[in-house]
Length: 402
Image (cartoon, rainbow, N blue to C red; front, side, top):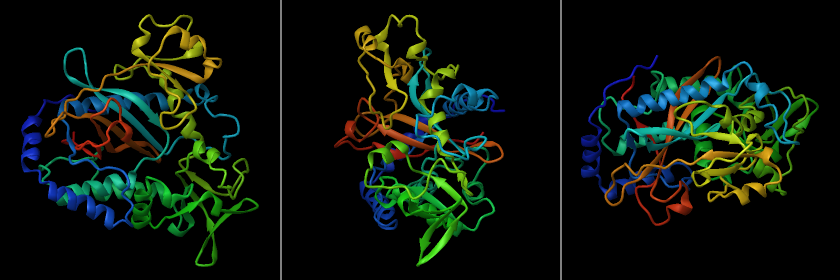
């Protein structure tokens, strides 16, 4: 389906972007995004997108399909039935996830070529509205060569919106569909919520604002109770458990007369719990700690991750046998081989490392639709490792379509 292609000359395109870069233009670009979206851009957008070679694009697509093949297996649900922690099982689970995110570190393989290595995966929505919007803003302020796109599967900006709108709204009026979050307008990703409302008419509603009457849910708008038919799931249970000030307005265990767009159970199922089931050249070796009869001899090349945690909490990078022996619940941990991000992306000072998130929508069938890029100059991705650095943060990866 996706044949291998020749490698285009990406280096001249990269150099032309660097040569033409104007910091004043970048400042106007960021200020435009921030000021015209309720001053809600609270994460860093990088000075530059990434231009992918055909070869690396093909590998990213192939790697994504390897992951999708596992999630589509008939026995997948039975393999991950224990992935949902006690107290987090939500009624009305759908037959499949509506969203799939697959995160890849860009590394060097044994032949010296750039190649993706799987880091994380999620059955949870990403910044679907913002990433599409960001592409338009980048093109408004910077010169993106003809023929490059962030989209996949032959999509354009227009058809991308059509697919996402159909998935979100179904047959419902936008007024009867809500984006469900915890304190949505104080979330770091709130710019995506504002854009979702602007594009599709979907209001963001806090869980505490939902009203349950029997099997029906409602929210208030202009003093009226509006029936909810579809819930666009954006909250994370980990945060809900920590926010003692937020009381959910409905019971997750009740059989409700609503449709979930992105059912919460898939957040748990398509997660670190799935990694040991993936057999691909693009997936580092990964094991349930409880399944190991003996530890790998090169433990310094592995990382220990708790299955049930969020945003990297509880990860142990420096391992030895004593540390693993001390784990009292090995069934709740995975041992994953480390990957080394390659600092390949040229910037005006030191090179940057890249992580590419491949984004799927799944209505009748799963479709690879878009991507999200994260750039870093620290040892790891994230703000704490990139303080006072430039040419890092969030952007998009452009490629020539297949």
